[in-house]
Length: 303
Image 1 (cartoon, rainbow, N blue to C red):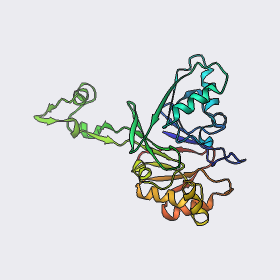
Image 2 (tube, rainbow, N blue to C red; image 1 turned 45 degrees about the horizontal axis):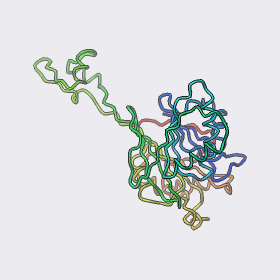
Image 3 (cartoon, rainbow, N blue to C red; image 1 turned 45 degrees about the vertical axis):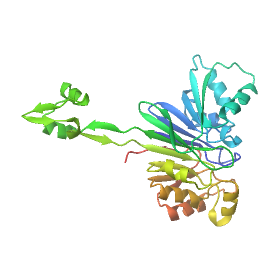
């Protein structure tokens, strides 16, 4: 599981930062959190195949989070068998997509699966074999979502323990996996006795919001929390609250209260050429914080 930060700026692209988008690569599948202007160019520069994107998770419909969608749709639609692109977003996403697609003139061969989420409380919106995606409404003045990508827990054999009970690889392990109990050397052996649960990794994406209970709930126990830090609280806390944004201190507060392992701050106002003060503010509250920059790649490690 790997993350690539394609854009770490707020509102407008600058010389050093593109606007919001983060790529999550999981077992060969590409998923985008937001798709700001220039996202597919950023993917190209970073060496990622743009046509492999299967899902786009849209937090809200401000332009800096969605302006790259139409170009990405056209690019994927140009391949011989474009398949389906799923777009998940807040209430109003279907209407926005209706107008967006019809505003352009191109051969629309890509199938779009558009899903709207209210997210009054954190809810699972995608349930795949290996992972789930949850969404929850946050507060930004317009419908806005936070997302959590959660790898499912997997039960693994402890080979040393299994061998100590006389369980050998192959049919015996298969029987245990099917729920059977084995009798070996006059002892009963169950699956739980020779296995352990490998906890799934969790990545959470929180953008453009005030501090809210849902942001903390959906971020709970995340391995990585990607969180907007548009302002320094020491300079512009009132502005952050007025416009429904977080300061670096707010982001760290969410991380600390949600018991996350690592905080990555992003979505920086263009007024900050150097993000060091924002990082220092976050680290004063939550030590394991880093500041993202365009093209940062981050492996999501297992606990």
